[in-house]
Length: 624
Image 1 (cartoon, one colour):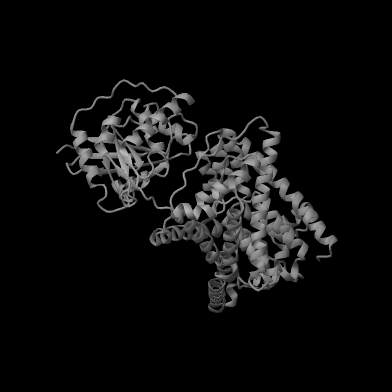
Image 2 (tube, rainbow, N blue to C red; image 1 turned 120 degrees about the vertical axis):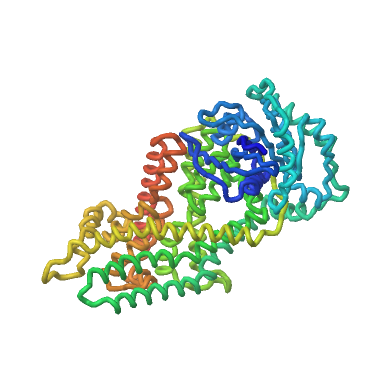
């Protein structure tokens, strides 16, 4: 039994099951960090082979080639070639391929062979290939490639046993790295490698005589240039209708619970403890509770997104949107990062690493914050519920859900418009590269996977509520409570506080767009996280009006704001750069503060101009 630790690197194209294989090999023995100097994630772990060999495994970012056209591909290329400082050269490379779709991976295998390092090919998802009637001559493929081949089923327990056994056998032999023949491939080199990969596939893979055409039949409808877009619009429309209808009972339950908890604190604490009573009731319970009450809606949004991803529809949606996005100067691959931005702009911006060209990547980063993230939902819901009646149109359309759908559509439209403007003024001579996308087969979503995904995202929202939002609510309560009103003062005590002083100082700048000083106060902590603005408004108005229940905030706003002000604030939140974390990620991903400042300034200008036009038009129409 040897105790020498060996280094193993998992290499492969995206969506080949490489990460699932990494999870099966390492289990909970994983470490996640960033590579030094970049924001690309570094995942490493360890396992012990049946023969007792200790192995450290590194999950390299997915790549189709070693050309290094994106940050992810650069990391993979440099580690494979031994160029990355601080990262040891792997003793063995495992190139992971999807057994149901070998074309792109085999081209990568041929390129990796030229590096000259010890390597094995892992055919993952072999069970799915067999179920579809696909036959692969493993011995012939091994001879053609000159590599050992092993099959695996990474998502099943015991699916990597053969891989561990073969790894032991491979490592037991002496392997010396051959001289590297790799040079940066030209377009002609890539085409030649693809022709060779296609020749090998034709020689070793036998397809079923009667292939399953269910996917093709569904695609003939959902990928139709007209009906496909109609179906996509209907799916999004239903999703936003569900945000209001399905979530309402749970939201009411949470609202009643926080109201009861606030009243309990009020009743338990003596009147002489008024300051502590105010902090607990108005600062913590009412403030944080007014944000947590929107958790059911956020769960519904994520449930729809995860179901569509697992079903295989998201890739189709990207395909449908490619022509529209191309007209706005966007690369087709930008759809996935922009779609991720509906949940949060931060992972959406980080997902732009899959875009090869830097200009295309910068354009996508610039417009990702315009997509309507989940943090906007509490603000939108609060204002819509207060000013838009919960009526039904045409017997089945919820008016509030229709307005929410319109806000999302406005965000998408503004993002495409900004992209087109950037294309015209900044990168007029640049044309996006052709869009190539592998469309996966449709499959039934795995309920366990969906449940884990929804739980993880709900947990992240609650963690955010318990850290950032809580700290901001303590700050806003302090600003709204001190200094206390002098003896014999007239009017609400908050009028004498630091919050009022700050709000009144900013009010002249915001008055042309219809904002009062209370809104100015709410926008300040909202820079930490958009949804904090709801809790801040609740704190300001609950102190002023004595309201402690979370659902009373909307009633107070309906009494104190005009419809023109409400519409102006909705438009403000479509555009305004209200999240400091997003700006920080833009700075990291672009390598400096330049594009962060550009994003902040152009979004701030858009928000102010759009709110100014909305407020004044609404007033001209008599919407007071």
